[in-house]
Length: 231
Image 1: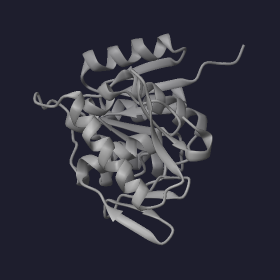
Image 2: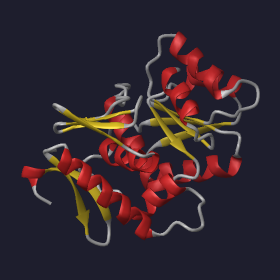
Image 3: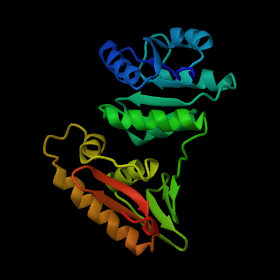
Image 4: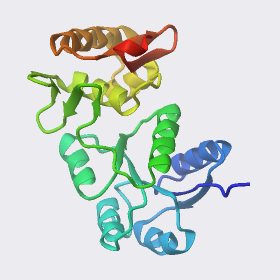
């Protein structure tokens, strides 16, 4: 029997850490919880995780400092940032400091599991800053969607939806996940908001002569697929 993949959860919110641990344990991962940055750096050497889930706001040593220390030691274990800090500059700082991916709280456990599986499978290969699929690339620096010879700007919500879909290409992403990730705690947001923005993105993909499309999986959600692959 193959050894379980090990995940180090670094978060000072005990309730969130325990919930994540419980969920990932059910997915057959071995987990360890650490509540502060300095302890995490020490435990990291002995536990030797296959993936680190890292909060940014930690006692003892903040998450960015811990991230830089781990990378300074030449370690390329995948690191997924889990944080309530959702501003673009915070996300850029995390990625530039060596994180592989960035999830903002609150997050959906289904999405977390999908990202965890992807990162563990890649074994430290970085999720690209500018994800591509088919002939389309999404650029973080200026929020543009590009194909050979054409480009079009995206609004913030369009960008966030497109990034989630492209990172998880060919996997179904639920409307609930998109609402949670893009609209957060906005009480006025409803599923129709997602449908409207998906319509905007489909028109922009048509403008770009994209060879990919946003397919609807009835009663489940959306996924990006190659056009020749069908729905």
